[in-house]
Image (cartoon, rainbow, N blue to C red; front, side, top):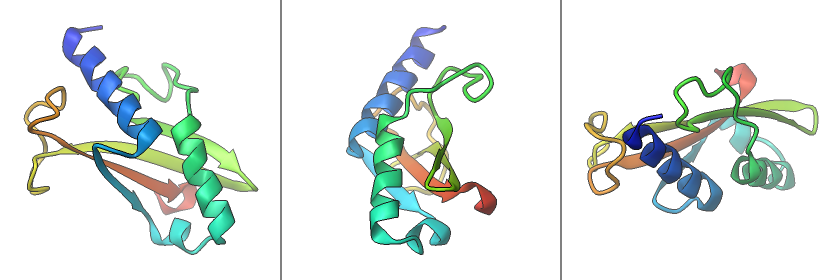
Length: 109
């Protein structure tokens, strides 16, 4: 694994575990869930550690899926410039990158 990939993974894990250092977005499907179910799903995103070659082929820890209370959820991290207009030129550099974590129901993908 390259040094950049390792740094991206470290930044992604830090953001995903704390929800600080970027933006968290939930879809309309997640927003329409009962509050306690939505809160628990977001906690599961923070706790997620089941990264495999199948769900994390680039080693960046930028995607995951899990089941909770009969629902399948996905989360995805994307990297934008600081104005959220374009993709980040270097996701390993937190100064020029805004991470956006989207949490959705699998059926919304």
